[in-house]
Image (cartoon, rainbow, N blue to C red):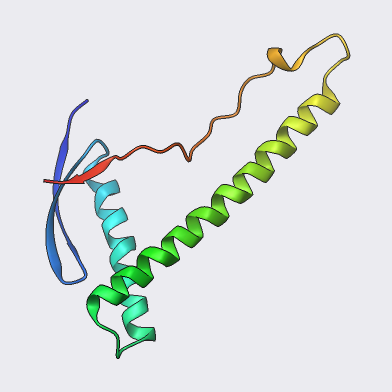
Length: 111
C-alpha cells in the first residue's frame, strides 16, 4: 500500500502526516479537526488552545459514538428485515454480511 505524505495546518500548527488515504482525504480530515477546534475557540474564547483541542476531540468522539450507535441500530434493523423477508427454507448464513465501517484502524500518522 502506497503512503501519502501531506502537510496540513491544524490549530495553528503545521503537521507533516503520512497515511494510506489520498491527499484530498487527509486534508479534509485535518480541515474538519481544525474546524472543530476553531468552533470550540469561538464558543469559549477565554480557554487556551490545548483545552479547545480537547473539547474538539471530545465533540468528535461524541459524534463518533452516536454514529456507531445509529449504525448498530440500522445494522440490527437490516438483519431483522432480511430475516423477515427470507423464505423459511433459507437461513441467515446465506445472507450477504453487512460491512462494518467503524472498525478500529489508523490510517493517518504523524511523520
